[in-house]
Image (cartoon, rainbow, N blue to C red; front, side):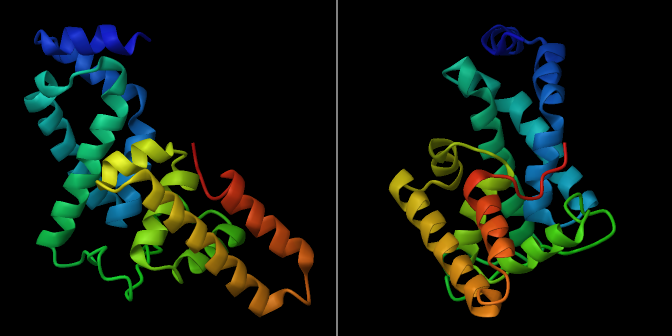
Amino acid sequence: MKISRLVKQAKNGNKEALLELIVADQDAYYRLAYTYMGNEHDAMDAMEDMIVTLYEKIDQLQKGEAFYSWSKTILVNRCKSLLRKKERYLPLEDERESSRTVLTDDNPYRNTESEMNMEEMLSHLNPRQREAIELRYIHDLPYQTIAEMTSTPVGTIKSRISQGIQKLKSIIGGERYENDRGEIAGAQTKLEYGTGPVRS
């Protein structure tokens, strides 16, 4: 798929070209929206808002190859806007608070006991650390893309991820380091190499 070609067609008013771009990565859009919204209904609402915005602002995209990082930034902003309206969004600047994704039957990450354990572990992080770690390892996004999506310097993103991982290591070590080194190594690998809960 030639992203730049489709973007050019979309800018010329070809709605099918824009739809093709969106459909090609629709699962990633959904998982990203779900991470923020916590349920299927609200995640779909955020995606619908994103699609409307893409149709309205596609002309503003300067580089066609940047379509997916640009569109996902729009999606994240729509999620945060919807959550603020619902008065459910915990401001990222309040580092003393922690966020917890709702565990429901339609949660795409609730597949195994180990994934629920990972969810519990992530709940110990502050919102900034958790957001950075989920975007990097669950959604496999580059540091630069995360920085653009959150309007944060790349160095700060790397610092949040590093601090978050160190905190998780401390939590794991404090709870069961002496009892099971293997499980600790496995959890650490999930965080450091991106093999955490992802469903394609």
